[in-house]
Length: 223
Image (cartoon, rainbow, N blue to C red; front, top):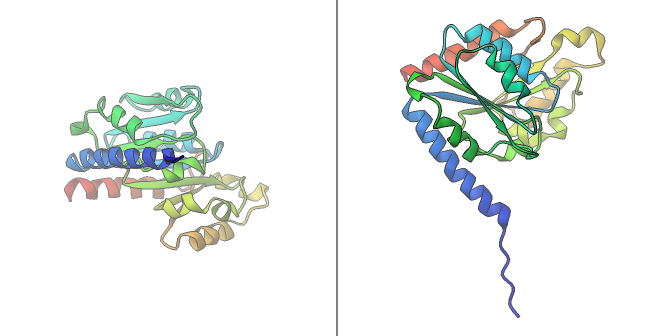
């Protein structure tokens, strides 16, 4: 008797990476920047995006693709801050977005009049780390209510990320959280990780964040 073993996950990942390359090719052809925002639930990712859209919406043409397990709540919130169509991907229980979903969303986006695409991934720090969506960079968001050891407990997503946002810093006086230690843990996991400190609620740190985003996108357009 002979047995043939098929590694289903490997085949799925190979297909995803193939589609991610197509996403990246299309974005690069139109000089569109795409950022993949990843966080655990409750880190404040959606409010941060709302504030970012309000800050940059008059300066950049921004499209949004947002993923959620069951509802379109996040998409509805973000749609209030942009005249562009917000693409809601309801995963039906899946804990991450994949490149096929992003490629499908691109079919409905006019890339000729788009400077930047924000991909708001499903709230999860494990599954999204392994899936290439064709983005230029992953941005991991975590908050001061989650513990300084977050980068050590979930190292893969911090290693895969290019940028990290420490959010909800307005709560620092009220929680037992050492921001410098959290950032040091992030740097220990990924020495090249660039950090931003923000409060999406009060607006603290958003000027620095938005200035970075706009400059990065402008550089990509003229490159």
